Length: 443
Image (spheres, rainbow, N blue to C red):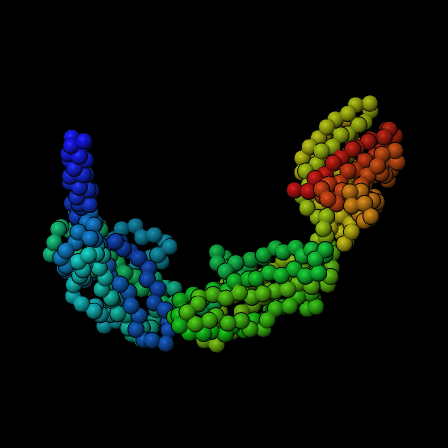
């Protein structure tokens, strides 16, 4: 028992010795600017005439809990950094060459950066005088002026050997605080069309669309005024009727929030089938600041659908000329009215030698399709279906004159499993029947 006791004590001592080494600094510490090289810093045009950009220094390879002393890092403004940058290849996205921001336009809060004990990172603010910056004639989002800084010394450890990590070009651009639709975040010019399909089976469809603030100070409440901008309807498009939607005239971004939501309710029964409608929802104005010029209109593209318009997995058996072929794939139905859909007869050519599933018009292939009416019954597993022939439409779709549901086989829709069981036929060019048995399962 005594031997076991001594072994436990020895293991505990060894473990304590190892744990001390685990928490030592993991390499030779180096001091550098984490935001080195050229960076773009937005200076927002707020009520204040002063804007702050932070110059940072970081000490790598030290654990903050081991740092028992302040590290003092000195720096200097070095105009040659701009000359070196301009003589190198200048990326186009940075708008070409830059010049030094006049010293009268900015000031450092201190002449040194302090990485305080217990930390590995330190900042000093650079104050930008917005009135003087605007007086230079700088345009919104223009990249032109830079503050060139370089670390000079450190009171502890060493500066990074890579000189590029010791210097920074803090470019300052001006921008107006604004509001925009989140769905437009990656586009310009209010050109996005967010596609929506309202379902007639529902009385109403509701959506919430997010509006975000850009560069605004928090702690204030903002009221946004909304409207429909009819002038932005695409040529040939239809404006969604005013009785087909509802949304509030104003929304608020609460104090300490950065966004809000616009609830839109669609009155589905007032959206006609067969048309594409547009609803250009616009942020017209705000209680303070204003909408983003390129992202403040949410262009909604709206079509009506019934409860049968889905993508379907299709399995077909086609019999013609004494031979039978099988085919599988996907079909997309298109709503025609609340209880009718248009669907293609075939997914592709199948086999033109076996089945003539295309018509000809001026030597063009005209794909066959037909319209199907669904008639609810007391038995949800066997809703009746009625085939309705189609004349040639604007897209060139039509069906053979002989097309009919097979009178010897049952066709129906299984509501519970959202599956069509169809048996139809038409005559080929030689007068023989082409018989199709098809199962379509909603995906």
